[in-house]
Length: 236
Image 1 (cartoon, rainbow, N blue to C red):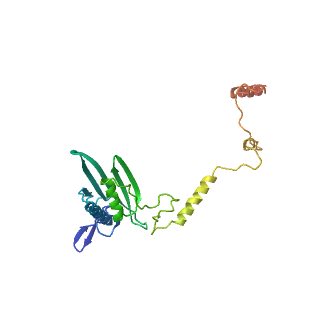
Image 2: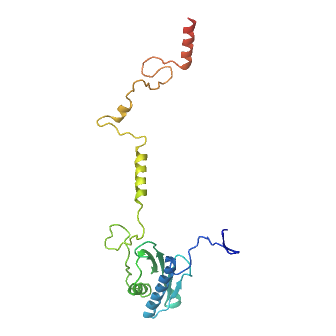
Image 3: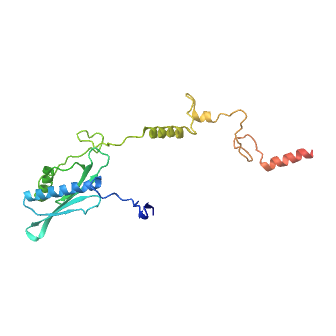
């Protein structure tokens, strides 16, 4: 472990890969968003006189979340109609909007997950709670763009970062170099298969070795026959 010496006293330098626990980084601010969501859900429940189970993630737990769960009695006490929702806070470093939400809710036997949700307003939270416990209409949330053609949604653009143009040019040149190795475009107007078989002066293609070429052109010499004929020529 590295140490730093101050006078006659050495102190160990903390180099562990940990995010500082302070109120300036984005993950610490996500807990503030989580607490605000908890307060919004609590106020929405008080407005319709219900007391559900509200839970929040522990400090320094990523991702931060808030959970809503309600068991409503139906007829007898042993029969309940259950509904729940969990809202997850997703930090987005270097984006125009630093936080996006993911909302998953279950009601009347159906579960739905909605991603890239903007921070909820009080009206949106109230609409969600009434859908869960009062069979209200399906909630609608403001969302960020998920596809390029969703022009009606706002785009959460990157800020504070830029593309390295020199790196992009290097990649482009590498792609051209790799694509050009071992490739020759055929001459216009010429059959590529026929042009590949045109003999080159001084270069002879290899011939098969055997007793015949199968096309009536007579026998071909094997290496052993060729060696035997050369021996006879010397004897003569």
